[in-house]
Amino acid sequence: MDMLAEVNGSIATVGYGLAAIGPGIGVGIVIGKTIEGTARQPEMAGTLRGNMFLGIALIEALALIGIATPFFLP
Image 1 (cartoon, one colour):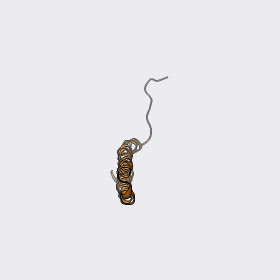
Image 2: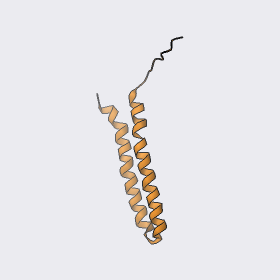
Image 3: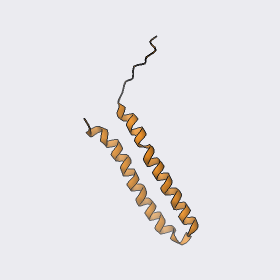
Image 4: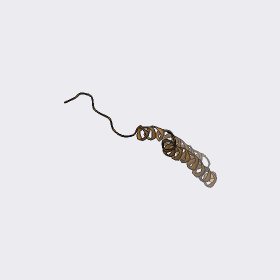
């Protein structure tokens, strides 16, 4: 049995796994700060919620770019 294992597959899957860490952290921070803001000023809950969803959409766009990029690079 050979000690060196052969690695098959695409490195793009590893790259996307690493690229998904950033948006995951970003979404967690956005949601946490929205909850904190709502706790401080409950009357702003609606405005904060709308801003939160906008922020999450922009963060998730980065994740989608991370998915699509390996397909377009040579």
